[in-house]
Image 1 (cartoon, rainbow over the protein chains, first blue to last red):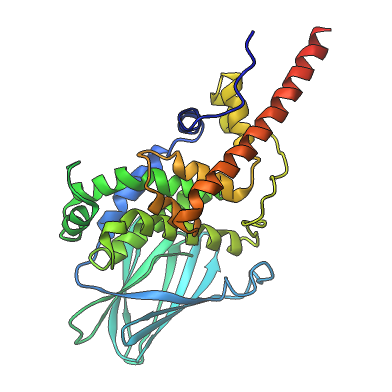
Image 2 (image 1 turned 180 degrees about the horizontal axis):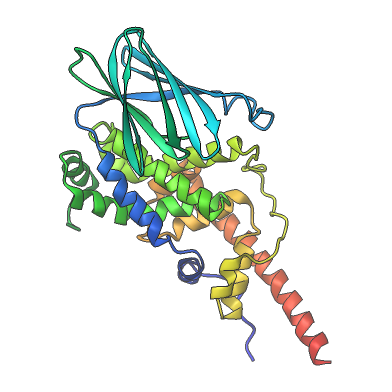
Length: 150
Length: 193
């Protein structure tokens, strides 16, 4: 009997990986579905600070998580408090001012108003990936925050 | 739609064409998955990294500076998300740049779908070579085959290093495979005695 080859070719490697670890259909489906969150003409506010990333590994799970998103001329600060399977978000818009805030996640959306001081709070958001869409009163363009797992 | 360039597909997707988006997904979901799994993330974490990567692209539709390098952009984004996931869970990539083999573990559940012994050993060996090699070989083997530009982005490594690194990684794989063959041979002989 011939010795089995110990020199894996690209083709054999590809074939093994394709069978052992194919892209799960649900992963492809989620990638397709991401398109439904496309926003037209929105300014992006990207995550610039996340308390969960500072001192990773020593984080106390009881302390609320603080997220900061920054976009052109605007900052969105969000405090995330855990409550079982759901999250409570308390936010602050900078500069201050009223706005309509839409919390978006894979399973739905919730709308909440930010007051004249730019503060908002919303409860019962499922622990999942979320993004906030913020339309400030009088603004021409909405702001969307980058997606983040909460 | 196969004849469209990634720039054209991106343009159409940004204008709201979901078929263009689906085509982008079918071209690159394999590469994104390969990067995530190459970093030894669990199925759940890899699915999470993949979804985040695609959501990032949705956010940046119409804003990419070099739309013709979409694959590289996705691979870079996926790599950053992997490192982020590892950091957040308190894990670090153990010496990503080091040329050391990973501690040999139990065969992963995926191995059960491989009935052929040689295939099973290739898969087992792939999980034991240095992390960087796993990302590299998996990215190179993703479907459809990526460009070196995309693979270079997946690793954060200059294009010129891909070829030599690939050769070293295949060498690692070969050595692991040989070691398994020796083990298997020994077991077979003992079993038969």
